[in-house]
Length: 112
Length: 307
Image (spheres, chains in turn green, yellow):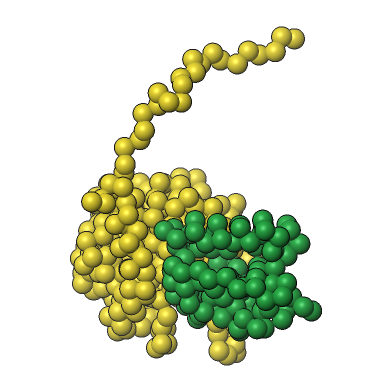
């Protein structure tokens, strides 16, 4: 899994590529945690490069969104591929997370 | 009154506790409700056999109980498919129970008993199940097997793991309105999907680390022009929402991994499309193929199997 981070005004975009699963979950959890603890709780997870997510990946998202919201921010998803979106839908995540078609839309959503 | 003194248990220093030996992750397969579509799990089973990935436990619900039982008994995938084709026939549900219909209309006159209420006789269904599984019991299973049903009176999930496999399946597929509930040890059992269409919780409770869960969304009706279709639609709405809510909780609560495998059917699959079972199994095999790279990596990282 590869993770890259970019700052957009008051929003941090965390671009993830590869598989989010039990073997990679800790790395992504740590990255989200670092951002929130650094005072960047407005997060966009760019999922364009995410090919696969397991239940361990869902637990990462849940922990991150709770941490972000506790600090007054949010975790929003962008460019989620169809197979990953299906897992998110079936596990109820699309009912608690905001999802956007692309990163600019997700970033702009924080300005509203 | 004197406080009750806690029992004196000599405290052992934590450092003296022996580390548990590295163990292989225990893989549990859960097959949810989905009528004939459950045959997709035979394709999944075929893929796991080919990959040499052992299954340590099988859980089945409703139509998935038939598949789970066949796998647990050690039938090969081709036999499983033949067996499934023999079970999902119109013949099994063709015979109406006209008295049951009259009991709906005149409950006071004819008497209404929940334990006997089903619009279809189950004689042919039982005969088909007996033909497939004979007198086999859970003790005959090569892989530990659990079949889920639902307590009609309390709504609780009931997990069956002893006795006749045919009786357990019959309870698990006691589709409301279609087949009468099954009396079992003082309870009245109805279809397992009513409590949880994808009973991942059973695999969790029984010690599964890595859970491969094949689930199916109930189809929505394209047109609703009868009371029967109306009831089917309501059932799908409730079942699909229950599937999502239940899976969401179990996926987050599990200490290990839950791989959700949801086959995507391009062709329409109706209730009795047994001629499509080879296609259905192929779709199931494709569905698990998406997970196999990760599954291989996960098992390779296992402390007991890693080089």
